[in-house]
Image 1: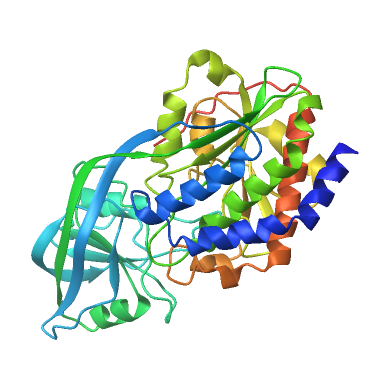
Image 2: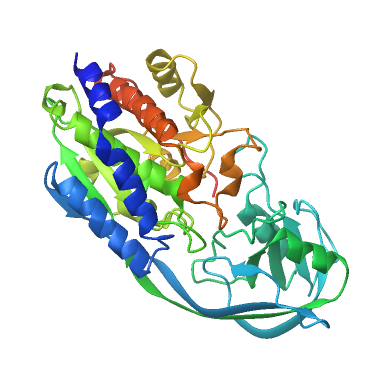
Length: 408
């Protein structure tokens, strides 16, 4: 009866769509901007209606960009681009360009060049992450890095450089049209006026006690990129997490485990927010966290997959709770669940569109990531699916907690 009551509440919840739209109204919610601050304030108000909410902030290596330009030489054309978060600053850096195609590691003879690589659909079995390509280019001596959105009419692709205030090279995302211009020849002139500085992101924590001391963590990241509304990634996950908490709040006290709802920031900064939060936990408190269900980009396709990060017990629980759900067991460091797994806490990410490169999730990290890509019925169905998985974790028999160290 408890689960069915919760599912009925989610199905009829008018605030799910309202909250999703409100998060989109705040803008792209890039960490460190007024857009993110106003969205965190909104989320805190929603969660405080359910119980005491703590802001447990995380320090992260902040970065503010004042101006960025990518100019084609000798035409003088300003190319459509956006600096990757945390990019190394530079001024009037003029370089020849080498197109490396996919950009897999192993290229030689690129010392002192600006290399250009292709952006890949982020949510697939064999995706080569942008930071892998960037690290390989930098190690091979490249002087700057461009990653090109492959689809025309979409604009540049955003993302994180992962530099975190350390050594690095200038790095920008560009549009398909800009890449086509560069393939015709010429050089680039790059200016990125930016500064590194210490920063802090909010992390909103709501704990709803169950019968025992153990806690299941339901997480989602609120931050995004400034290009659009960061609707799929990740207004969907935050709105769903709040709706599930709202539906479960009256029921948790009878569950074997309690629920800890965590709305993290600085996820787009190489998962910095949740990593610092976990590292700062008192050992006794961290020992109470028995598993994590992370909601990140749960709409954009009706097909859902749980990335279970190599933990067979999670895969078995999820298949029983939601027959037909996709399961990908190999570890993938593409959201906050990876930090929980690295801390020895079984963790999974719920994701739409896995291995579906033609889905609407191909617009994540671009200016097209807007609310029109997310039908209400799809977001509601995904939220109800997540609720089934969470309920199963709250009520599942004990399973061994396996440490899952990651290669970073």
